[in-house]
Length: 640
Image (cartoon, rainbow, N blue to C red; front, side, top):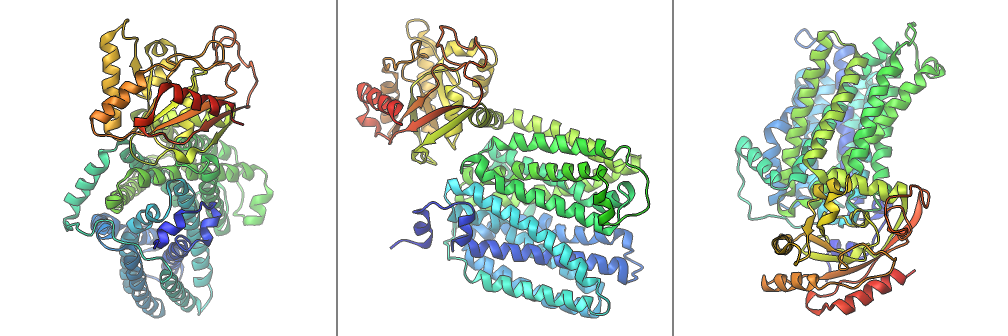
């Protein structure tokens, strides 16, 4: 009998279709209610301290900072322990316990609001931060247990969208409720209790999941455990750099979110409503960008979107500086007067743009971490990431404060952050060229060509596999990258590495150069040794069996090098499947040799011409023959 998770994996569903699935929908609404409750509580508390109470030891000028710091402190203290707990115990039970804890905290919070006691509410703030610290690793480790690899981007996009919408609604509701004379604190207390109870009731519908590492022995030392988890993440460079990239996004976002009130008042000359409008626009942008990820990635984990997101973040944040130059001085205005001035539209467009691209930037990295991390310790990696996020946000506050104290204006701080974003992301992408390569393949397959892939689901999400394809042009390898959710190691003719730009690209991709045996027997043997190591590592190897790009558009003779690779794999005890592929409609393109020399006639077929890749069913390695493989590739080329 199938488990609920197995049953759900039989049928693919769309991104929004996940909201109708029991494996995802209850969990989505649990995290939505929790995020809304956190922000309703914090914002209402901040407004109450700022406008309604007079507290000598916590003046309004630092109230927001104190509340934010107390909420984030548990992330630094307890994330490492929370990650271990999430991996050791069944996540469903932990989710329910966390929601039970939320009800208890809200009971205490109710007393704090009714008594208008800042001490009780500060204690609640810390406890809510603790509860969120425990839930954080659960949230992102739950998804890879219930979603297939091609659903991870869509699922993460929904979670990010839901989180920011919940933050927005929580802040707006908290501010409106607490401002009601005499009964505001009663309304906030009741709303917090209702959200906590609704979250717990919804948690009851979350499907039961087994623990991923029940034998784990918990290390209660948060410092050593955090260092161990970071070392674990560093074993996979793409995972570790993604963690740094996500933390940088929180640094970037925190600068803008923390400055909205001052930016509204001092630069835009708007009142509290205008500050709220900025928050609304920012949240909507994040939500749209997060949801766009699945469509733009064709339902796979596509980290090629990350550089696109980074570029957009820098462009719009830098333009935000220029959009504020020359704004006329005016009296404080409300939201109606603000939007009637067309000079302010550019400011809103920049905010929407930078937040939309931040959504495109972050979602694929979360999905990559989940896909590339062993399920037995996903929660611990996420916990380490949460600690990095907290440290980066603290650094963001300190650096922004220092820049402002040094005399920079708020728009100038935005400009500095935009430039820094360009430099930091460029550095990260050069450390892990996979980001740039996936970006290049995304641009080529979406903007230069209309690239259609059929049967791509046969490429396994893990384990060694060999991809074989006809060789039509100089960019065949880049298009194969776009079709595969996993990194590909290529065996390629050594002469291609001497071609400007393309040679540099394939060196970045760590392609394996091969020379004819008669020409360079040492390089020939070394290529096969490297190919064997790729398969031993459980990675994807791609080979063009013709050995060279076609000069007449026809499929050439298949060389026997593939059989040697399969024999080596068999000797290593590996059974490696071979997947035949057929590229279509590339003959005659700028990158093909249709006129004898490739890349000599620009715009030969214009932009966005149709090309395709038909993927065949895997063939067991021991059943592969070169004639049979060639016949299958030819059939795929001819297939409509």
